[in-house]
Length: 236
Length: 333
Image (cartoon, rainbow over all chains, first blue to last red; front, side, top):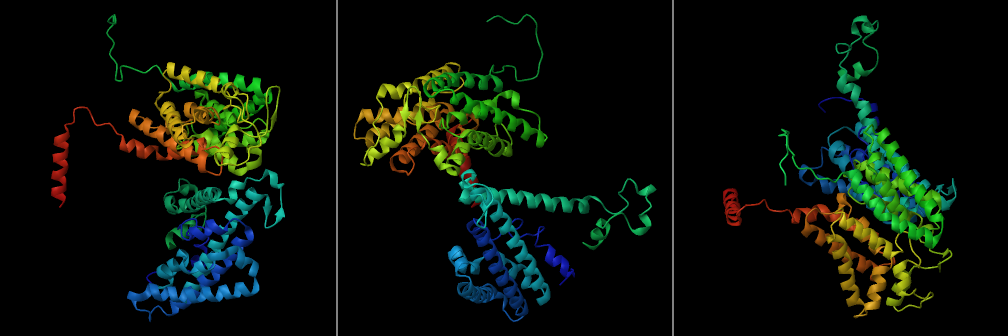
């Protein structure tokens, strides 16, 4: 670990800045497939998050034992065992969700997000950081799925998880079909980019009080500047 | 030709085409008017209402989206009016007005302005919007039940034809070929009157707004394949050409400048492709009509068609080029 980052940052980066679906564009197949209903999206998000957190922890704990040449097969075996556990639990306690997710539940094994985090983060970082990273990514994935599912189910059927908001005859069925999925996906990606950009902008442009046109008359200079941008700029 | 009295010095280009965007759009609007009149006569005044809603909401959404995106206004080039008119022509008479307005908003905001406005859209806005509406509101968009002074229909002739072709039982008799030509049959209200559409098409060709290459190759391909499919039955071919949106699509939609190839060869390829896809969908697809899907599909292929049919610069010797290529490859190896 060359630089130490706070655990809070490991968590929050998965929400918007490095949102696995909307910013890193990983795991789009299950995203598009199961986001036709809010319940399905929630089930998928939770299942994938649990697998992600568990596999991150185990892979990070074993990172010094796993030989570099066979790390991918090793990761897959670890992920697959957690997916099997989750699948059995879902089958036992929530058969309805199991039915609605269908093949996408076992397919979590090859979900790019989980393997991607294992390769990019858990294989290089400590157990605690990896667990927090998994949580952040899991929340980001579930959030993106939920946002897509809410838009698609609401416009596509006029209801949110069965609760009718407006009459079904006004619903645009195309939103629960694949083209509508791609459309909503694109819109949400644009939105996430916009948010990430607007958050990143002050960091890129303002460099403390030197570049501030009001610096000469500013009373906050002694306190280190007018907002947290300065601190962030020096830390990050 | 007389020489100019004054010698003017100016930067190139020195010869300008008399065509402007506004002029072309105005010509298209004029060419669409006969069909609009025919539709009003055949289906009644609701046609005008749907058209007004479509055109109005298209212009309004163009104005608002340009304003929100902080781009210069383009409503005066009349392209939004044409999009609204073409979308309206693709709707059944009984369509709810809010669906018509929603269609215009989708066409202008999603398909046209989000990709950069006029000249930047990669598919025809009116057709893409029509397909989105068709997939979103299947029952309202395929409600052909019409009762007016001249026509009482429950199905389009195309649906009947498809059932006949597949050997099913026909519930409604086909209208006579003359009625098909004059427009006294069911369908979207802009597509029924073949006579008016052909008049509009001829006007556009005479004014040199469109080249006849796409409409002729498109309709010709459909005719040839239908003749084969119908085992030489010319009546079947005539019904296929006059029914559905083939004429409207071939004359007004497939010829959209932004979404069709530039070269003559490219236009022919485009037309033949449209014809093949239309025939296949009409005969074997689950929907009775395939014109809009075929044009959208070929729209997407236009960049590739353009690449295939790029004209060689005048005077490039063929042998030298081949020799250079060989040289380059040799250098690479």
